[in-house]
Image 1 (spheres, rainbow over the protein chains, first blue to last red):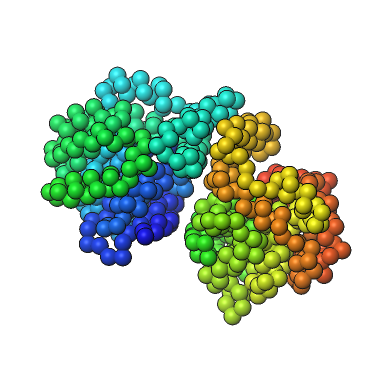
Image 2 (cartoon, one colour):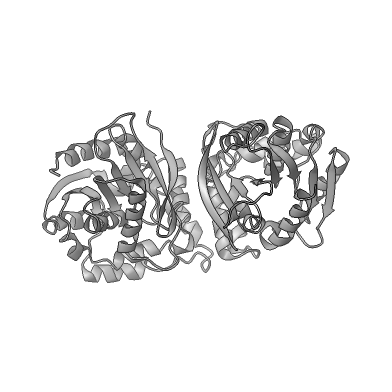
Amino acid sequence: MITIRHAYGTCRYGQLHYSTAQPAKSSRSALVCFHQSPISGAQFTLFQRAMATDRLVLCPDTPGFGGSDAPTTMPSIADYAAAMADWLDGMKLKNVDALGFHTGTLVAMELAILRPDLVKRLSLISLALFSPEERERNRKIFGNPRPLFDDPDYLGRYYRDQVTQADPAISDERRLELFTARMRAGAKSWWGPAAVFAYDTAARAQLVTQSTLLLVMRDTLADATRRSAALFSRSHVVERLDLHGPTAWDSHPAEIATELRRSLDALID
Amino acid sequence: MGIQVWRQYGAGRYGQMHITAAQPNNGPGAKTPVVCFHPSPMSGLSYKVFQRVLAEDRLVLCPDTPGFGGSDGPGTPVTIPDYTAAMADMLDGLGYGANAKGAVDVVGCHTGTLICTELAVSRPDLVRKLAVPSLALFTSDERTKMKAQFGGPQPILTDPDFIPKVWRTTVFEGANETAARRLEMFTERLRAGTKGWFGPEASLNYDCESRLKQVMQPVLLLVLNEMLGPNTRRAKEIVHFPVLVDISAKAGHNAWDVEASLMAETMRAFFDVA
């Protein structure tokens, strides 16, 4: 049985909370998983346990999310990536594999560009790649504060969408846990999405030199992930449309771990 | 001079224990450290404002009770002695107690007052003095009635309106503290999940009176203008070495946030007298 442990590291914004899981012995590269916003590293709990049977798996909370201290002003994806580099440097880790989902894909690839000495291989699942028009449209919808204190019905609707009427593929206890993780980002939870929609994914992807696995699951970013293959210098696309992106981390964690193990370990460093 | 605040993990019998620590920037000084045990279903974050004031001249530790905040929890309901034993594990791990760094002073609120009481009785080497505003002291009859009203699981997942109602009453319509602080505490409450009732249940199963009679350390009974004010006052007849201070004219249930300086000064006066 793999045990998950929690700890704090440090980064430029203060303490950085992360969870860690590992087998008794492993010679494989550590895998660092960057989450979607406004969730936290807790998004990967089930997957982390499944993946950590043969390697160290670390799931940090992005600054301002989960248990990590927040920046005082709105950060960019490059700021988040730099904070993650601070933390990994503090851990004295090198040559890790970086995995990202939605917002986390951008943190992972920016870290790969910023610190090629730290990141050996990339796994990007549901890459946040948008055309300029899509970015502007999404920024207006998601890149603004939630009406937490202005709309008396907001929380009720959000709770219904995320917990009571959410996809039953995830247990209700777990949906509550994920809802709580979402709420922990507080009134500044929109900083994550705002950073995403200010980031030029297409331009930055062309600067990535590492082998990059693009895992296409069934979700709104499937087409974007697929078409991004041409942007990366060393990409490898794996189609897994049988896996539903928003729920698969919880409903099929072992299947994702098996797929990643097979695909990631087949990539040439 | 300022203070530094950080979070860390310790170890208890149910797994990892999450702790928020604060002390002066230039070190903890010579005063006895204070450990604050929170009401349930909250976490050590309940003391955020108070902790920063009290930590101006000493180390102040605010652990999350197992199953609350960031601490791993038991899978089934436990008792106040169980929670207390986990806290003793954590304090032992940090080097407190006999033949080590010595005893600490303890502070509690609601459920936390019972952990203070039990720790003082079961591990007197760990506790020098107790400050218990809002002491959860109930007679057997009171406990039976309260259990009927507040005991057992809450309909968190069975009543779709339960959490939204909590939000409306504690955050949206709340008038005390800032909106950001109300939101923070609402979220902290959520972190206990469907097992948040374990804390209140343990409190209502605990015979506080008989254990209070065994406390041999000095006890500050700090009376606030809130539901447990009369209960706290009543304890004066039970405790061996009570110091009763009534600040109910100035401080109510939210004193930890809005009268943090008064709370800290009152406790300093108690803790620091020889």
